Length: 164
Image 1 (cartoon, rainbow, N blue to C red):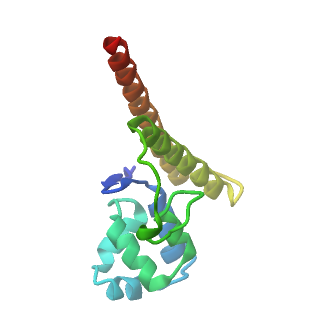
Image 2 (image 1 turned 60 degrees about the vertical axis):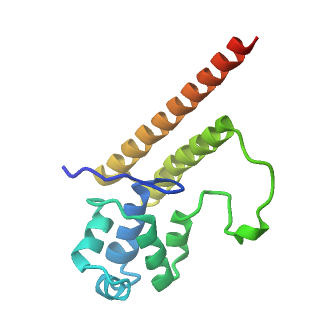
C-alpha cells in the first residue's frame, strides 16, 4: 500500500486532495495530455505522474504552473480555500487576526478539505481504497489542526490568568 505525501507550503498546508484532482484531470479523465503538461511546465513526466499518484506531494508552485498551462478551474480551486476568491493584494485591508483566529481559519480549511474529498469520492456512488486513504489522511490533518488550536487557546488562557 502506498502512503500519500503531505507537504507544508509557505501559506498553509497542501493536502493530498491535489493528488486526487491531478489524477482525475490528467490520467483518469484525460482532460489534458500528461506528457504535454509535463513538457510545458518543464518537469519530468515521471515526477508529474508521481504527483498524480500521491507518491510525492505536489508543491504549490507546481500546481500554479499546471494551472497556468491547463487553465482548469478544478486545479485553481486547489490553490484557494473554499469560500474565497483571489483578489489583488493591494485591495486587501483590515485588522490583523489574532493567533486563535488564524488557528480557527486553519481548522475550517482542514475540515472543508475533508468535506470536499468526501463529496468528490462519493461522486461515483462508492468510496474506494485510494479515496479512503485520502480521507483518513485529511481527517488526521484536521485532528492535528484542532489540537493546535486547543494548545493556542490553553496558552492564551494561561497568559490571561497570570496577568491578573
